[in-house]
Image 1 (cartoon, one colour):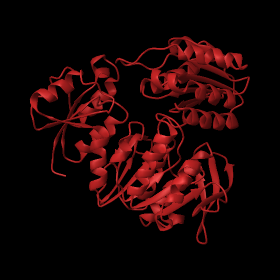
Image 2: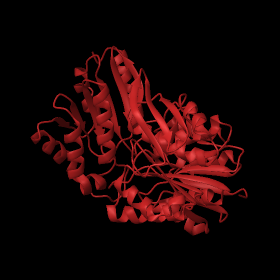
Image 3: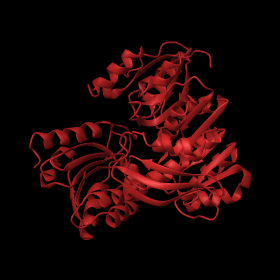
Length: 463
């Protein structure tokens, strides 16, 4: 791609920043704005961007002044934002992030798009790790920080490009990768009917597919595709699976499993993470890496050193036996899976949950209620705040309070407060062996809050 001049509106966001940094590392001119920076939040992120040669402007339109600039925004940006109005005024092209990322993906000689309702960031990180460790030197743009790299992107020298693909705004319809991964499908931002169409079209356009057929909607897509185009993976002896994980267990800090290519090679997997769903993510990464020439044994061996992905059951630290965990789970399926994993490892949970938006909570509140009610134990404590809100025209509802009321009626120990800071004293009840968990999405300050709770532990504010 010829050098371009990009301006990212919302450049500090978890999805925007990795792409902006990757483009800068690839030789493009990059600038941007973020109202979080204007508000004095996340100065360390702003300083990192400036250190890469990325200039920052107030989010008032002043950074857009030439037609050759390309404005990049999220799909949710409103036309009244000054940067958008300024781009229109000077004749600059306006692209959404997914449009730009899909162009990079589709233009690569060899590409892999990792999609799915849950697990796609971790799977992308695992695939990047396997390919890098085995000498394939890929370029990668992930939607989360890969802890081994301390960033959400990688600039490689090969022709191989790996990207996390999002379906929440329908932009998955833009991608045509050489290899298309679908980890699973469940109802989240869109109805199941819409999701099946979006993911089904993605699978059809992909050159080859890696499909998590333990998920029934994914299995239905697999059944409609030519058999030679599908590599199915499963946690168990699924009759249609090409790659299987069996004998799942745990050895100290490692998840363990026997991975088998049906009718072929076997390998032992040792994965330094918690949560059996991460074995499924590993199968997706291993299946995709095999297509790019990585033998199964080399792939499993490389994952023993995988450091994980930020905010995916990330263990921030431990003090006096209390573990602080930072987790991105935000839709009902992810919440249920995360809590199930946590209850397998910790006798008591103190879970601070910040919903990721008024709209999703209002639309799917019964699903959230069931997710918490079915996964939490009576002795666990759930602390729910108001949804994250950074401005805009969304209607503010009382669904967070109603969620807590319903869960209380269902005999759970649930509490509501408008601000998460009100919950510091409730966390005093955590004891050795318990976990204090910060859960939610779209708000990078949640990680800072988790680290501050660890600081409280270390200073004796939490016994």
